[in-house]
Image 1 (tube, helix red, strand yellow):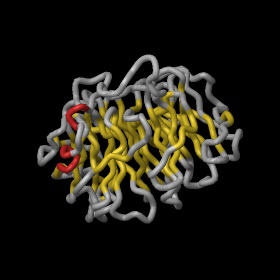
Image 2 (tube, helix red, strand yellow; image 1 turned 90 degrees about the vertical axis):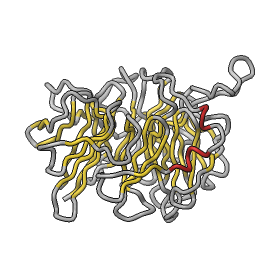
Image 3 (tube, helix red, strand yellow; image 1 turned 135 degrees about the vertical axis):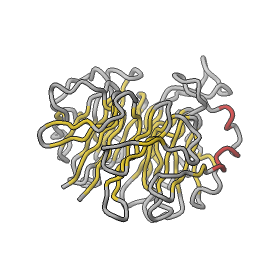
Length: 337
């Protein structure tokens, strides 16, 4: 059993067996959400808005308060457990920064070493005046002090000392990194989802390299190979099917997407979009693995899809939302137990 919390363009909601329950912040666009149980067993929910900072509820969403301690970035893009420190949390933000909390999200401290990266001042976003965005944070299995973070548009960055110091990981010419993930048991296998944008210092036009797609590393990030060239925001190796790779590429930004699957780590692909139109009206923004082994897909148009793990070609997607649900989903999290 698990609970599902959603961040939407009209606040936070909880999925129930009979539909959805509004948990407030209706006037906020919630771009990141995370739920946990504190030492007393109470449900704590963190809701990151797009522009007005973090909000926190210590009573399961009945009441909310803004988080002021240490959170200096206005827009949250991801909230996740910190694999380098048991019980800690990380929040990736816009502008491109990462913050850590040691007290269930009540207070935060910036991992300031990111700002020491050469070229940090060049990070940007095509759709926002803020300087870059940390879209997700990933730690390969067995590498307890290594953090990888996707920066749109700035590059793939890593720390090998739990977030104190940072360096770039060279993914060829691509710096528009939408997501970094990998194999659930093999730290050598990594996948970077790539957009079409380039830093202003990079060449564009005739003779410029091709940006975008999916890059694969089989040596922990030392070298990379392009296995897809269409614009991509989401890939996942389903924990229940680690022999597969799911991806959601699209030829155009935000539209005409598809869901595809690979049995050979991206060398070849086949359709995995039964139950939805192809091409899609939008595209997959993020894949999430739920505690029951299902895979969920947040779409750029605000849809939320769900599928059981299956053999290649047998993935069947259904909406996870009631038919009359009008808000657009931007984030989701699961709370087991």
